[in-house]
Length: 361
Image (cartoon, rainbow, N blue to C red; front, side, top):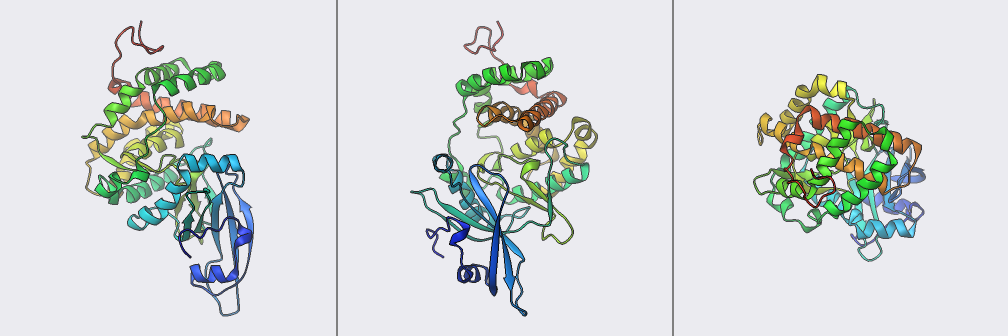
């Protein structure tokens, strides 16, 4: 299928097309919606064969949102292009927890796209609020190391325009969003966590500039490497872990995903008990490109990514009871991570009477 020939809805599928892209003798199929994504929609395509036919029992079709506003948002933010290009340009070069892609297409005018991916089932979705077990965390970080290793400081990825879009989040925006965040969750934010948030917001632009310096190690960043985007394979699954939702993939500080996962996926006591072993698990899978001390320092510097995401995300989506519980859980875990590794010490120091409302007076 040409790369511009998009399957917009599962009803557009045909047996002939499935045979051509999968290379197996499909005779029939059915589909059902899975997941609750707003920016895109996923469908499990169950495949049927004749008596002598063999092939995958099911595949997953991912397409753009039916809702016109959501689709235009996904197109304008480059989310659809990034996910399709991840599977076409990046996935073939890396290992790790990535489903195989049998077909992809993207229409830059309309925002329509499709991805036909290998099914991760049978699998269990991670639980953001309960948190990961130490075993799940070890697996997630080892697989992340396998994913990161081949592209660390890769010049082709570093120069790819679609991976290097400028972030819309700056100090002015996060200051505005934090004001609403602090008001909404005022009685739920511990004083020591409020200090972390206000220090980050006050020096946000200076912090980003420091982390963008040329001597910082750069790599592929999933951008949302957390349990809600992880499918842990059960008996009979093709992979022990499948990571989904690559719409936020970018090029940036190499240890961002490690810091984010350690901060949000683990209750603080579990993270503290296994911290060294978890970093070692990632480092072994990464290969010899970085020392363990460099991994530790990079993670320390990127602990603020999770704090930033926790401030921004609830202010941009519909408020729900589960969402509030999840974001307060994330805030507590990320801020404790910052404090445990003394990351506040690396934030640029603001001078008294700086223009930030959170600067010292």
